[in-house]
Amino acid sequence: QVQLVESGGGSVQPGGSLRLSCVASGDAFRNYCMGWFRQAPGKEREGVASIDSDGTTSYSESVKGRFTISGDNAKNTLHLLMNSLKPEDTAMYYCAADYTLCGAAVRSVHPHRINYWGPGSQVTVSS
Image (cartoon, rainbow, N blue to C red; front, side, top):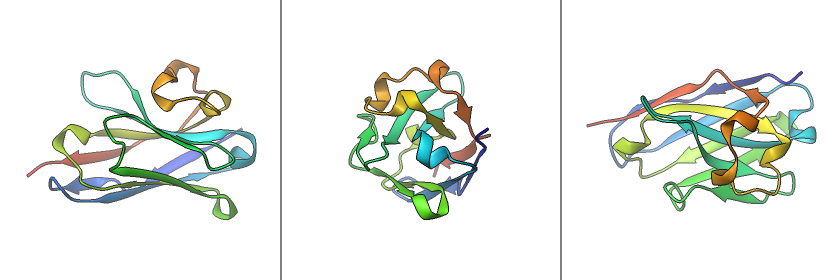
């Protein structure tokens, strides 16, 4: 069983930065690939970034160049550094773990195929 817990969300002005973290229990980092999804009110959940076991990363077009995903295997922790935040980045952000994130573009992974989710962390970008 995999448990994921996010932290680091909050409110920030446009142009600001936040770093999300996700601590994973068990063998999540060894057995699965990891990623971040987000869901804004009234919208479907969408893939934001993912990372393979070999460090290969994938980003959605809307965050490429602004967000950076990284993993600390020793601490079983996944990070998402978000720079140059925009109001349209406002959403609940979810940590995810699943085989379907391995070797795939994160934008092509349907959320229904993800087996493990964290409870989410709210990010609000507003002036």
